[in-house]
Length: 262
Ligand SMILES: Cc1cc2nc3c(=O)[nH]c(=O)nc-3n(C[C@H](O)[C@H](O)[C@H](O)COP(=O)(O)OP(=O)(O)OC[C@H]3O[C@@H](n4cnc5c(N)ncnc54)[C@H](O)[C@@H]3O)c2cc1C
Image: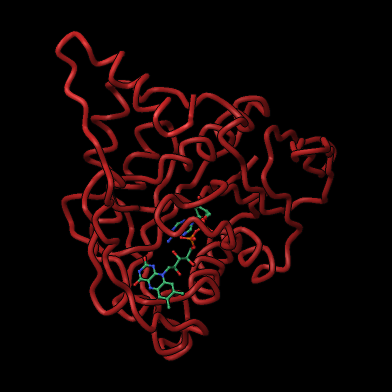
């Protein structure tokens, strides 16, 4: 079982965000692996463990600091890490992102066939959930999205998908792109040995030239969406802060009654 997991490097959601030329300002010190991608790594590790053989590749596309996302995946137990990075990719939309990651997936697949690509359900910065479908289209592979459980048998992947008013079981032939939700599993904690190994691991960096992609086809210039304007959210108004000096509960109850909320 050979599985590639895509892990995105995203800014710290608790920090104050700002924009540069319509895109989120990204700095080296404040990012980490998208939390939802821990479920993708865990799903891949479990499938390989159940199969009794195989390898998990973790791949990220991003600037120089994005390497920390794949190092986190190595800490969790991924066997290999790949960092795709090229200045010309900055500003890419979902199609550009899928073109670049798709080419990297094909490169790994050409060395030895992959059974599956597993992604998270959403990146907590972009939060579009568009990438898994765009990647499946780019690769011309089956897609199984928003899986709360995933299993493999007889050359097929089967997922369970919980919808607001339905429960679906969907099967597709391998190779497939599968996106998993946060219900899929409980990610494991990294152990000390893997943390130390991940710190020292050599992570190959692939550029557009390595992937045979014309830089004119990706990046902001090729994006089909343009950010016209972006501004910071105005400060919230009409807020009341209650400092509890023993009467906090009463004050809160009075506030809720006053607003007709109790
Ligand atoms: C005009 C425009 C300009 C943009 N400029 C930039 C920019 O300068 N810098 C920038 O970072 N983004 C930029 N973006 C956003 C970028 O296109 C999206 O991040 C990308 O399409 C993925 O979408 P998403 O983040 O919503 O991921 P989702 O679709 O919500 O992510 C689902 C899953 O896909 C995988 N995934 C997504 N992105 C990556 C990645 N890069 N590496 C590995 N796995 C991934 C993860 O497993 C994730 O859980 C721009 C978008 C537009 C429209």
